[in-house]
Length: 66
Image (tube, rainbow, N blue to C red; front, top):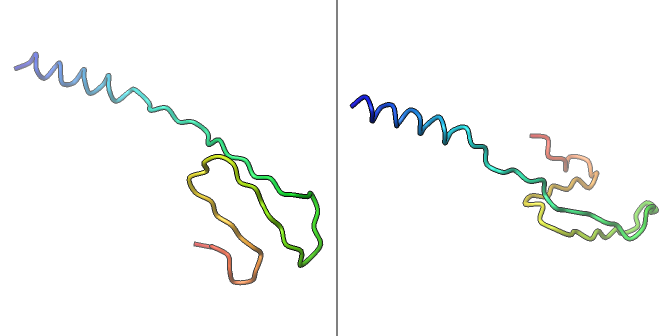
């Protein structure tokens, strides 16, 4: 019985110490120009996989605060 307990403890220690690989997202955003006038439309080119994108347009009371 002690052998099974020892094997179980060693297995838990060995497998719990292995960290899964975490890779930075490969994602880029580009705009057509570097400066715009107020009221002018802006289009962005999104490349890659960001998995989650959040956008704040600057409109009052439209921010995601919580």
